[in-house]
Image (tube, rainbow, N blue to C red; front, top):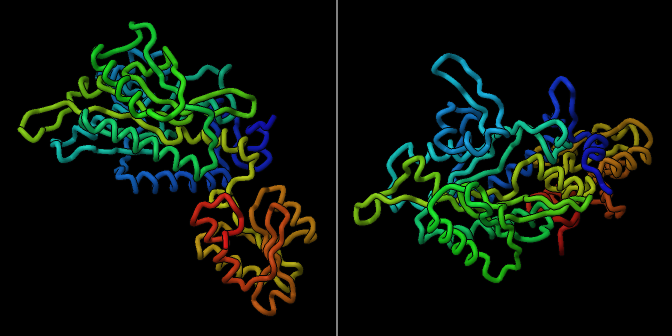
Length: 405
């Protein structure tokens, strides 16, 4: 069984420390580099799909979460409120949707503004008990890829279909292998809020969006405010969890008195569609480390290219090549200590996609010999061509190490 905690330590991706606290991992430079690459990919996909990114604070006044319903439904999972004075009590948020509702109502909205897609990679916090914490899969500080699409009722079907397409695109780029789709429905009525007719309409809309997609039903798995589509993955131990989700919510617009003006001048309630392409960065990377066994696609590998001078006489050529690769946007390093064979083995152990060997002949004519982490070697290439090859693989987010053709 592949354990992301062991691999994470071996590859220097993340660590923990008792002084930081359980469930609060520390991302090391290698892990941070991979995570930043993935985050920018997700933001780029969201921008292309018409999302507007916002930044909101990780805490808010107690009244905000009373209004949203989270204090009633998530009280056991929330950290205790922080009292600054008799009138000021703040709470670490367990979700981003209350702040996004405030963003929506920051100005008047009309039918022409919708759908309005608000996205954020934001921090949320859960007061998980120590016994359930584990590596990156279950943590207390969560970096959530989240968005809320505000739309009219007749736009819901198209919005959900577009979200599912965007999820599939993100999964393909990252190498995520979904185990299945689940339509999460209500269980006992006392756990849920909102109008019965709204729930029935929301379930009907999600079923229609899943037409042609094989899925199971999870009774009792709905959010407290609405049904959802959950996309499941399975870890190396065979445990299933939700990675991506689409949720319909008629409740928050009512609680926050959200509205838009329709073409006839009447005020209407928007529907709030919660969606996450890849869930939290922590759970996502726990899964990615295991599914790829630490061998990430080149575009989000922590180090993409290592330059190996054979001897000290090639140090200058190696440094020049690495600088050119960095200028092209690649994460490149020069490794010069130890034997060439030892450094090649170290690069392979670190799962670095490309090793550029620079010997006397290569240095003399401005070339490098590329070795791929899968054991293949390419014929010597001019330095600029070698950089262009790697940059093309990275730019296209290809799962292959050599571009086709």
